[in-house]
Image 1 (cartoon, helix red, strand yellow):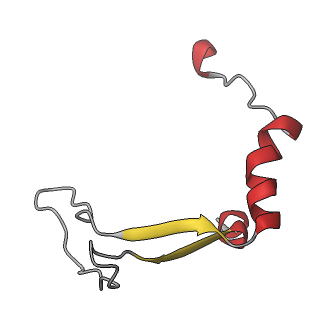
Image 2 (cartoon, one colour; image 1 turned 90 degrees about the vertical axis):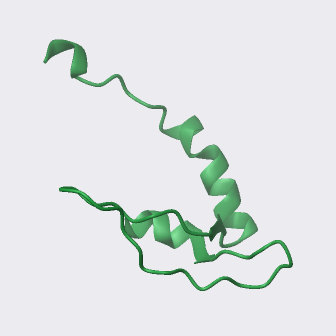
Length: 70
C-alpha cells in the first residue's frame, strides 16, 4: 500500500463544474456492507512517478499464479 501511495496522489473528486466534492460516509446495507460509490481522483504525483508506473511491467512482468494447481 505504501508503494502505491508513494507514486499516486489520491484526492477528492470534482463535480461537473470543477468544484471539489466532499465524500459522504455511506455504506450499503446487509450482512456484509460496502462503501457506496463516491467521487475521487487518482493521478501520478509527478512525471517521474508516471514514468515508473508505465514502465514497471517491462521490468517486472506478471508471473503465472498457483491457481491451476489448487
